[in-house]
Length: 501
Image (cartoon, rainbow, N blue to C red):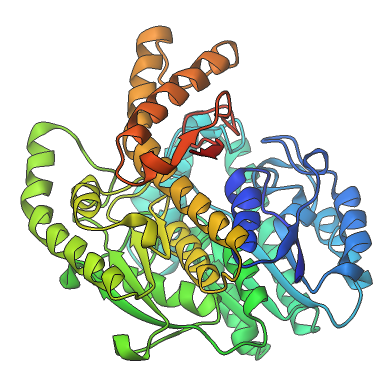
C-alpha cells in the first residue's frame, strides 16, 4: 500500500480529514500529525515538534506533502497573526534539508489574504475595526503603483487608519513575502518536486496580487517552469497534492470539461482573479492532468455549474430569488438531464457546483435529484471558493477510478454523501437556519462557547431531518448521534460523522 505523509495547512477537517478520506478511496494510507502537534485556531502549532514528526515518519513514506505555512508560522491563522520575525520563520524551514533523499516531496504555501471585512476572528485584533479600510488601502496602493490617479482616496485612507496598524499590516506582509521568496529559493535548490504558491481570497488588485506578480518574476528568472505553480487556492491543496502524489509515474488523467451555461465560463468567481475556466485549467494542471477536446478521449467528464451573475451567495429575498430562478431554471434542468445521461452510459462525472460561494445551487439540486442517481457520480463539490470546490472534486473523482475493493467503494460513497450533506444540506440550508435561531436566542448569529453543545444538537436534528428526505442518500446514510462538531467554534464550517443504514 502506498504511504503518504501530510503536514496540513491547519487543523480543520478540510485540511486533515478530506485528504485522508480521498486517500482511502484510492487505497492508500495518509499519515497526518496528531492533533496535539497542530495549530488550534489562533494557537500556533509546535513547529519544532512538527519537524521532528516529519523526519521520523519520512523514511517509511513514498511521498511527502508539506504546508510551509504550518512549518514556518505554525498554521494558517498564525501566518496572519504571529509576531515571529522573518528570520525565525525561515529558519523553521531548515529542517527540510534533513529529509531523506529520493522521496517525492510536494510543498505549498499561501500568499496571505487581505479580507474585505471588519472581522478579526482569523486576523490581527485591529481587523475588527479597520479590516475593510485596510482591504481598500491595499487595492489603492496597487492601483497607484500601476499608474492610476488615486492619490486623494489613498491619502484619505492613510489618515483614517492609525499608523501603528498600517505599519504592522505592511511589516507582516513584508515578512510573509520574504518567506515566500525563501520557498522559491528552496525550490531552485531542488528541495521539492513541486512547489505550489497559492493565493487565498484573491482579487485583481491588492498587495497580494502585486506580491504574486513579483514572485512570478522570480520564478521566471530562476527558470523554475512547471516545478512551481501559482494560482488561487488554499484549503483544497492538500487533497489535490495527495492525489497528484498517488498519480506519480502514471499517465496523466484526461478531462473533458462541460459548462452548464457556456457563456458563463468566463465569469470570475468571488475570491478569485480569473475566469472560472482558468480556475478549472489551473486545478487540473495542479493535479498533473490534461484537458482534452472530446468526451471520447476523456477519462473523466468535469461538469461545471459556473458562477452566477450576482457574484455572491444566493439572495433568498423574493425578487432576487425570482430573477435567479428565471435565468437558471431551464439551463439547470438541461444540465441535470445531461449528467443523468452520462451516468447512464457509465461515464465518470465530476460535478463542480460553483454557481454560488459557500454552498450548492438549489436550482440545480432540485433538478439533479429528480433526474439522476447522485450516488453514481465520481465526485461532487460546492463548498467555499470555486478553487476549493473544483480542486477537491477533481481529487475525489480521480481517486474513484482507483477503486479495486469493497472497502474503497464504501469510502467513495461515504465521502460523496459527506459532500452532499455538508455542501448542500448544511451550507445552502441549515447554516442559515441555525444562524437565525442563534440570533433569536442570543442576539448574535453565531455560536458561542456557552451554547456550542446546544448549537451542535440543533444542527444534528436539522441535518438528520433533511438527509432522510434525500433520494438514495437518505436511504443509505444517517448522521451519527452526537457527532456534529464546530471545528473553529463558529457556524461557517462543521464536521460530522455518517453511519451506513
